[in-house]
Amino acid sequence: MVTVDPDDPYAGLRNETPTERLDRNWVELLQELRVMQTGVQLLAGFLMTLPFQSRFESLDRYQENVYVVVLLLAVSAVVLFITPVGYHRALFQQRSKARLVVAGSRFAKAGLATVGFVVSGGVLLVVDVVGGRVAGWVAGGAVATLMAVCWYGLPRRALRQVRAGRRDAERREDR
Image (tube, rainbow, N blue to C red; front, side):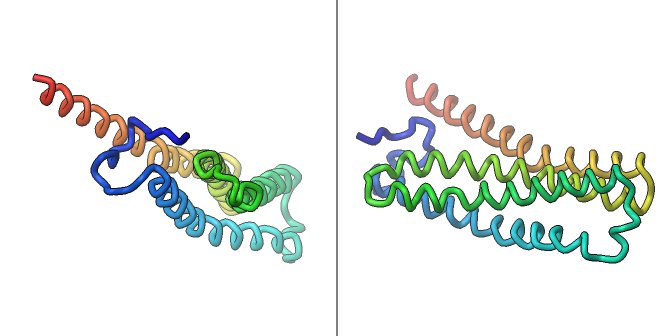
């Protein structure tokens, strides 16, 4: 039996069954994954070609290590964003859509965090090569901070505001 999420702001507002809601959530998740998958796959592919460029040989050991970490993180992000497809294949027609949606959401969140490390690590590497070690760390840290604020902080703040507004509305209805 699938239960309805009490935090779902659409509960009771849409004329859909819990199964239809799960289907909608799955489709919305797939749309998000499609946006991320393409960019991450292109980034990972680009990173895989860098060692074959002539300038790559001029990197010092530290820069090579940063590159390898960024490459492995990019490949990990590709895996995380594609994993829901494997889940879907394994759970197809098993009446496990709720499990699929929850797992897919978790993999998408992990993939997004991993992409944050890839992008900030890539910026660290490029700025390190162009402007030096300190500049690389400052630039990479600034990008990591920006992504943390935009991808985590602001959405969490909005979620708190939505939930607070819902609680206030419920209190007004109880009077």
